[in-house]
Image: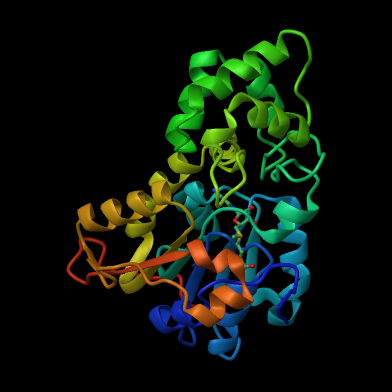
Length: 307
Ligand SMILES: C[S@@+](CC[C@H](N)C(=O)[O-])C[C@H]1O[C@@H](n2cnc3c(N)ncnc32)[C@H](O)[C@@H]1O
């Protein structure tokens, strides 16, 4: 059942916190290739309902294939998870018993999508996870002002060399359009003096992260689901979030702490053990935070859309 293209991170830990049970309704906000969803459903002997969100058409198609054995118990939704309230209302579901987010990119998107997520390859500079979004990374690199680009690299990429990178992009685009990932990586490489090149990561890592977050409005979407997800959880329901960089983790931590009606179950984030990190290098930066919906919320007493 597991798709070798993408290895799901912190799988045992998610199951341990989510405690999937038969006849409950779960939501996977980041279906990807369906690894976490398959494990959640398998834990319930297939006797639960799962709503799987992914706005990437390719991911949805792969997940549908990988999860076919669960039949109609899985509902595939090609929408932004930030639209959770609208989507659940359309499906006639008032509450869910568990919500999982496994943020960011899948290995399928990074390695095989030909959308320029990686600085390692010559690919079109697209970076949209959802191809229906109007503006792609090449558009942004062409149209944003030098100051806007510097802000994107600084705030979303936490890149200290944001200004020289933005300047170099503007100088280059004045004569040559920047249309591919390798082209952009080369501009970034040359913009930063060698003595400031980081030792442990590629020099373009942070700027690429910043651009991707901006194109997909990742932090806005996360803030929305962190707010609305609490409202759709049934009392006792668990909200599990796996994040991969400090901007996301900080948002999750603060939002869980500030939310009325949530009890934080992980005072410190759960991280992958040595063995998992060796098996799957992606797991090294993964952080899982979990909170539980308290039962004395005003929503308590509503019927859930349980099967
Ligand atoms: C890390 S992968 C998920 C992998 C999955 N948990 C698994 O085990 O196979 C993240 C997925 O979330 C999707 N995604 C990211 N942000 C999203 C959003 N706001 N709404 C819907 N899907 C999103 C991406 O397209 C990607 O396929």
